[in-house]
Image (cartoon, rainbow, N blue to C red; front, side, top):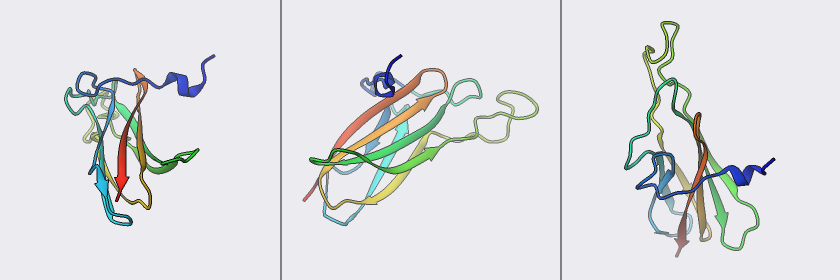
Length: 131
């Protein structure tokens, strides 16, 4: 059996629709509010159907020199077009795109993970400098 970390896949988000994309400034002043946008399917749209969807995205921050990341956002997408009338007949679907706002005191790495109900776990990273 594999460890959970071995199950996370990585790829270039421009060519793979499952990779979470992290968008934010590369540099931010200490304690300045930083908007971090995360999404799945930026270049190649990911389906958002009852049968095939992104369930969640989680965002972490690993301080430079740190040994463990801090979870900063847990974004759940819980409506996928399901209803009593059948698959994809529901009145609402959530879109797998969200923003989190945070303040950093030190430089480090943002880590985004996502889960597709068919294709499993995915991750990506982005360095952010505080200066």
